[in-house]
Image (cartoon, rainbow, N blue to C red):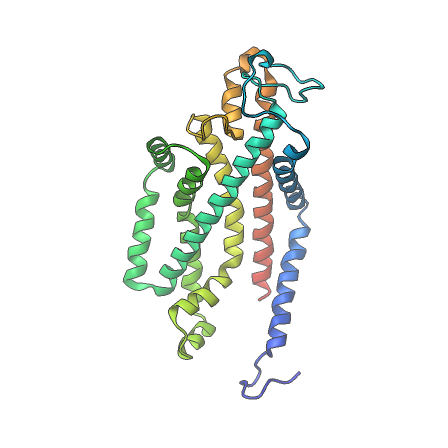
Length: 302
């Protein structure tokens, strides 16, 4: 196939470039599906999402009104996972808690990734004084212990799902910002960026159309780890009693409540939420590891 009119000698036609990019994405997908652990992780995440959001449609329970006459009942036909200390059905509670944990995990990761990507791309591409100033802000916030900052914000404001999303997202964006900034420092020196600059492309266009899209691999990998971290942070805050107040709940709050009865032999208050946290976080870590390998392979073939 020959180059188009006006193209420099040896230029790749637009169709050929698109096909090459498609081949690289297929290569990344092929590497990803070879990871059995990642496929297991995808299955676990899909199951947890269906369980949490579609489960209540088929398994109706009252998660608002307490009933002390049914407190701490062991697993039975009426309550497959038993009941807790105020009579809530544990299986239904697990579904409700999964909704909060997954919502906060995904939303906080999106907030952190969005802010961090934009911040890092602007700092890395611009360079100079602005880069130094923006990254010193990042370094200053990182110097504050994350748990201390989360505890402070959670005690100052009334905890709820939206607050947890904002608090976790506004703390977790620092990691993506540093990663994307490193990528941007490399991308700004490439020839195609210089070509766009010589053709009159604005900084906004270069960052939005060229720098950020070429860091998509790093962003996707980091996002999966951000989701896992956010779920753990929600569990930790709720374990310390700083989660959304009842009747709202999440897996961390259920685990915290169950620990109070661990010596009484009420195992059904501990194992279901603990297992849900471990499986979900491990699943996202498996997915993140596979995505990292897939995009590293893709970059090696570029």
